[in-house]
Length: 249
Image (cartoon, rainbow, N blue to C red; front, side, top):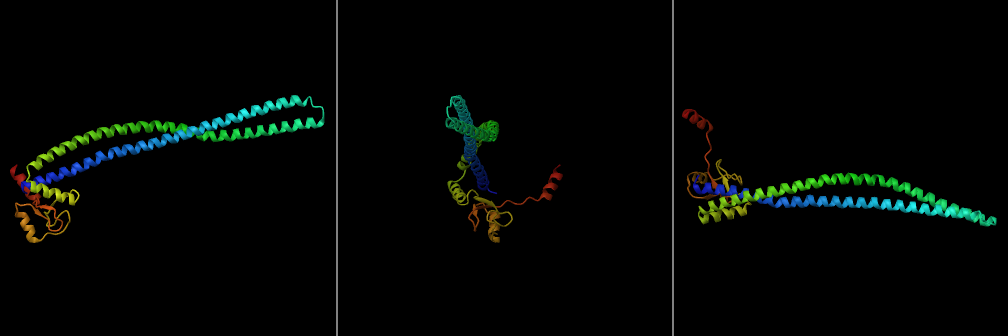
């Protein structure tokens, strides 16, 4: 494997790592925005539930006030009834008292309904308040984690970019241009292994003569099918390596 091929391989590894880091850096703010949006939705839902509880309480108070008014009317009507001089006047007072009593019963029924409606509303509010407190703490933890993780990613990315610049400075500009063009075309994978007689990227078998030339060539060669830079990396003979290790020891 030539020094240029080794350098390009490292360059590709760095570029792939840089791409992953950039995706992480871009994804973290989106994740935070998503969980903050969910939190905001839950806060607004809690506000709606609280408003419903408050409205329920106001309605109950209003009906309780209506009952007091009707009871005061009944008390006055009964006092006036004692002064009635004719049967018609007496029956009229009775009719008005009956009407007030009917209104009181309606108000009492409505209060009972509202009390029944308020119980699940109040339970929802208490549960939402508890859940919201936990969710706020979790969101703050995730935001803090995202800030730290982003700072780490940005540091790693700066290191990767620094090493990339050092490698590029040691390569011929034509090789770098060739690599960058192929990388852009194939979305990151510009160089591939051809050890087994085929391009490991496009999986097309190489012509036998081309493969033999690749094994011996000191020049940069490209896959005749996909155009990627190819390199030959002789397979390791594990038995031979083991024998040499034992022999050397």
